[in-house]
Amino acid sequence: MICLADSDFSTKCMSGFLLRHVVPRSAPFQLIGPLDRRLPFSRFARFGDVIVGVGHGEEDIFSGQQEEILLEVGEYNKDEVNGKFIKLVSCQTGEKLGPNLIRNGALAFQGYTEDYLWVADADYIATPWDDPIAGKFIRPVIDALNALFNGEMNVVVYNIEISGYEHNLAQEEDVLSKSFLRWNKDHLVYLGDPNARIRPRPKISLPIPPPPLFMPSLGPGKF
Image 1 (spheres, rainbow, N blue to C red):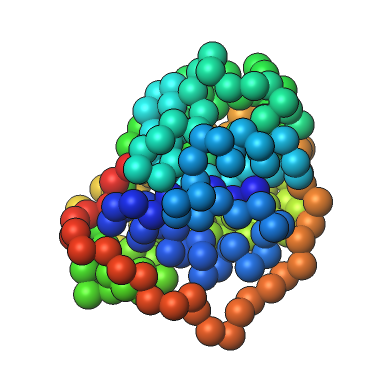
Image 2 (tube, rainbow, N blue to C red):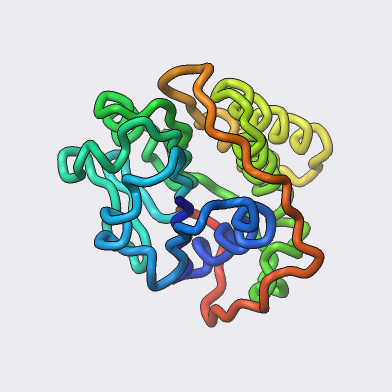
């Protein structure tokens, strides 16, 4: 299951990259935009072997559309996460929520212990997947997710994302961008079974992108 909030610029930007590069490989349960709420999540999370989520977060909370809480420590059913590989592209959820998911039966978790930061170009507001600036920060996430869908192990997926940040750090000259890349790299965590993996999905790459998105507000990326 893939959960993609898109109710503000940050979530729309990150979700746009996943729509372009990851969603075509996913199973039918896709909670995108208005569908990304607690009730549909609780119904569909029990199925499949993976949960990928984009949304705002706190140490013990992961939120969906318009910051409606999808997962909160002590407030979800274990059946929703049992046996799952869970990747949350969200601020801070690696601090308390991730460990709690593992204790409640998740096989693996990847997320961030602090805020996830990046810079985006407002000229690409309708087609965020074409933004070369945001891409420097987000492509490591995309590469890691595609490795996950290739059936790679938890630790391998983690190392692919880390390597992506390190590669882009070596190429980057802007001081702010370098600090954001290093920050995201230093606060990525993987938990649970290092050898955990999901069933490989077909390698699908669509020749054309999704239709343009609309978002009136602008700003830097931050969950």
